[in-house]
Image (cartoon, rainbow, N blue to C red; front, side):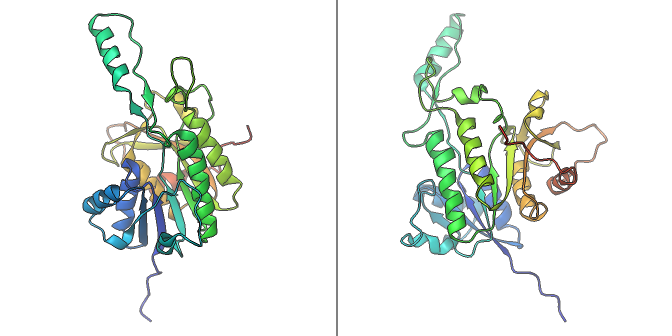
Length: 289
């Protein structure tokens, strides 16, 4: 008998127009083992994604997955049916307040005390709404349409409420819509309790650099924050997302990841092999506190 290849795994990528989501979508689109559908928030994002990845209209769906969805009445749900997995790449994105940037530059010029510029989130696009309520809505949607596995791209730093990233979106008095890592961690806990199979990825500082150039290091519970090198390429994170669909498919796991400069004669380990090696250790992040 001729060997028949298994049918492709149908995967939904949410936040597919974002900088990490786009890379995940592209990698899955170019791999015949997967049938990918990207979900984006606006028509403009859909057109941009289709141009960049060169995919068809049927592969991109415009919907706000961050609001609770009515599975019976929403037409676009049809394009998401029978999906095996969902990769969640949505995240609240801070924007710099131009006025505060101008102040910082002026103070620098006059050599006065320099306060870092302030950031804010777009109305309705703050962490509680996007990273907590929005991710909860996506996890509920996944359950409602029969998705079995979720890969969630989150962030390192979630074990420490005082992490500086939690200040983004707040004013000088600590008021405002911030606490991005606190809301992300609450969404992760919701996923843990959902009964769905999961992989949670906590990247270090995200860089727009080519993947496969540095050695991936995986660990748990923010111990990697002590490292001098704490960044990771978005392309490497995308590779870990794809690897999570196959090599960690039978295990529920949450891990942190960074990449470090290799020794001159060191061979770079692929994302898949790095994940396989990590899984043999039996470690996962601790959510008991």
